Image (cartoon, rainbow, N blue to C red):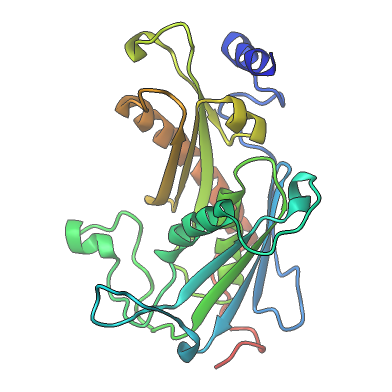
Length: 288
């Protein structure tokens, strides 16, 4: 009954359960520098009832993570890490966990890949996309001064009502800049949902309804959760979860990507107003 009522409200009135229009994003709050002491960089990003606190810590090159590769002649050195924590209290539950669950690992990997394109390394010269196209879709990383530090972002979800992984991308981007990591551009993330009428099996006869910045209930009762992260110039990572038996038609995916782009530009503007560029100086507590 709840699923039917949810879908009928959207299909018949084009109004969502929280009163927003289909393309509206929730109220945004963005802050940096909340934590003092030895913290190198911190940021809080709040979108509706979803709230993420991100902390950036810098380390020396020898502290990089070494990952063994069985089919490669040498081990991989990982210099940017993101840890995503989703405690029970953030969605009103009790209980403890002794290790990260599958959801935390997956969401953390998505957020890490979303930001990794903009985090400079010692070897950076050109953005990888320039090698193939001659034009960067994302924007060049800063390459004039090599950035030697190992970078770790800890993202703690303090409240969750949908799209916490994309809120992690936004909080992480601001925390990196606050710590003085020379990101070329901010990275923001948004989730786009879908309600497809159930009266037609032929996609060509249906009028899909797309929802920008979905709530938890819209993820649960809707037909899609399309997470898209990127800069003002292009996409750095995306993930599609779809419940439609036949998958998502390409023309629908194109519409969803455009709606994500429009919302992403709005988010990037808010984030840039909070912290427009990386801090000029590293924290006194950061290693040199």
